[in-house]
Image (cartoon, rainbow, N blue to C red; front, top):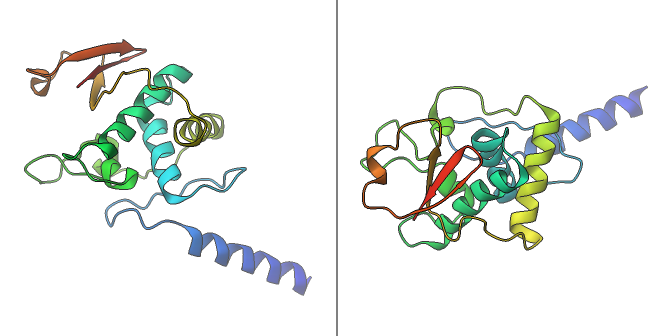
Length: 166
């Protein structure tokens, strides 16, 4: 009994220590994945989950590659977590990805969707999944009127419920 309790405490301590520090205003505690995720993969999986959990694999990979394209671009932070948590130009309380600073908990609620997001994050980062957007840096929901920021940007593709731009 004591050994079982100690094992549980050690496991809890490992999970707490391993939890990434992503941003002060977002305490993203994600369910334990079947395979361990590093912080950058976890940030990408969270972006996929919250921006495209209802999308097909192609739609989720498009979201992932848009984040990865930003990492490679001089205008954006050079880490995935930096891109995901970036504030809008001009600062304030708005973020590039609205789910990041909407005041809600960033804990994935659906295990199946979270597993799919993690798998697609790994595919985009490590398994050579191709960029279906052809270099997109921006996207918005296809369900809304194109935002003002789309003016002057090249529309690259509509994939699922998102429109992608460069």
